[in-house]
Amino acid sequence: MPLKLDHTIVPAYDKVKSAQFIARIFGLEYTGPYGHFAPVKINEFLTLDFDNSDHPHSNHYAFLATDEEFDTILQRVKDEGISFGSGPGSRTDGEINHKHQGRGFYFDDENGHVWEVITHTYISSSSATN
Image 1 (tube, helix red, strand yellow):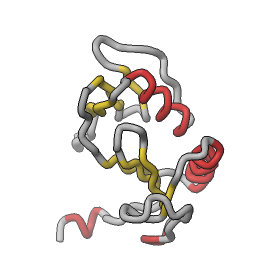
Image 2 (tube, one colour):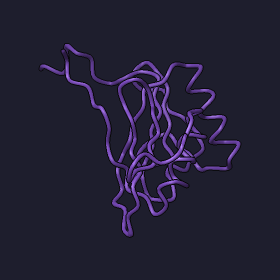
Image 3 (cartoon, rainbow, N blue to C red):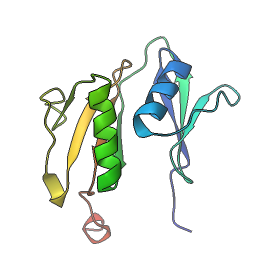
Image 4 (cartoon, rainbow, N blue to C red):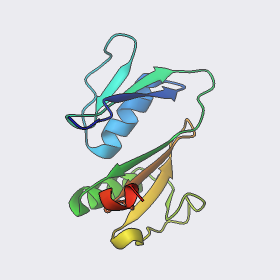
C-alpha cells in the first residue's frame, strides 16, 4: 500500500473557530471536537486536526482541486472578503496564477497559515524520482 498522509495538526489561536473557517471555505463539514482536537475531514484519507496554541507557527497547506472546486472555493474566499493572491510572495494581489498547466491562488488565515488551492500539481510521479 502506498503511503498516505492521514492527519496533521494545525495550530490555532482558537481551534474551533479555525476549524469552522476552513470547513466553510472548503465546503466541508465541521461536526465538533474529537478528543482534544477540532478535526476537519478533508477527504477519505486526510484530516486536519486543529489544536489550540498560544503562538501558532505559520505552516503552508496546499490542496489540489478540480476546476469546479477551485472556482467555488475562490468565490467563497471573495465572498468573505479574504485577501488572496497569485503567489507565495504576492498573497494579496487579488490575482490567480496559471502555473503548471493549471490555476492557483493563496490566502492567509488569522493564525498566519498560508493556504494554497491549485488545479494541477507541479510534480509528476516520474519527475519525483529524478
